[in-house]
Length: 279
Ligand SMILES: [Zn+2]
Image 1 (cartoon, rainbow, N blue to C red):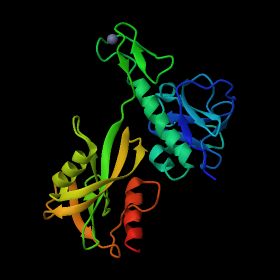
Image 2: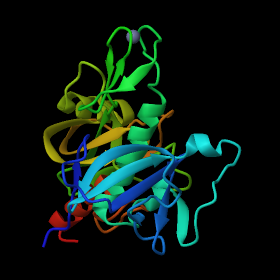
Image 3: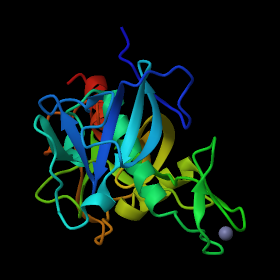
């Protein structure tokens, strides 16, 4: 049986019941309940009803709402949450709740941050208001529409004829931890060009046979990760030192510390390669 998925919506469908999943967002944290392994569920959010809300969609026929509490607790680093609930960093929510709830938490954080930073028009400076049917805010003076921004990023595993794969240690990782290469898509560039460019920039390796693998929303702060596989064509590794600490070709039976498993697309790419390598 398929697990229920998040259906993203802007307007609550008619006849939707009051019982809902609540994503209470506070400075990159969300509130979890029920021993920390699920979003709070019920007819009201766990922190009262007087806060700003955004409808996010449905999971299994129940509504999902984001609740923004940041302004109500500006003098406290961490708000008090009721007994039985816990405020958890969004990154730590990943892998801890069912997938649909994880996507809901990421969607909530992005919608809340977008709404907070688009209260005024980017063109004329007038106040904006929520669009009645679209996920947009419209300017009350000039009508400019602002939509939530997504930043597409490509992430890719490069394989070589001898069965090795290219993994790199990015500057952002503390300690010795390797992963697949990744980078943002530039305006005016297609995804395949971005794959070629990022690998060449970061490691001096030219690739061929770029093929799509899968995608994943990544709300830090608003990425959409697009996974690709590619094959080595030419070049010796020369790292881009301001981004990469170390890059190397690793054999399937001699892996460095790296992501594994299904929830992160880097882990999925590496697992897929290992499976095809017979590991
Ligand atoms: Zn305007």
